Figure 1 (cartoon, rainbow, N blue to C red):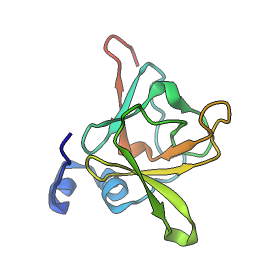
Figure 2: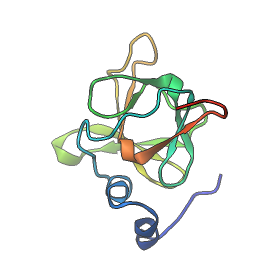
Figure 3: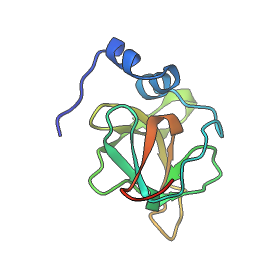
Figure 4: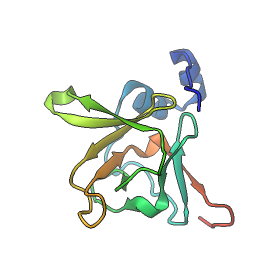
Length: 135
């Protein structure tokens, strides 16, 4: 897939203010501020470009205050970058198709799965139910 390039003004015009702040300015939404997503089968897509990133099957309750997944969808355009902001060393995850900041990944996820916890800002993803699934 081709990379998506927009100016800051184009992104600002196409996103609500909070989604713009989080995805384009590497912000973080307040913990527990995003309403829950449906529990039905489906995919979580990038709020900026619609790329499929995560599956409902890998979502779990981590009690961290943000949606958590133990794996990305196979072939998903999720890239990692070392993040030294706020006096910490973390691994940022972003959409490799459009550059949207998604959140961070930590090695404290379910040990019976991948051991990873993709801690994702709820405003950076949109849930799309599988065809025929009810939310």
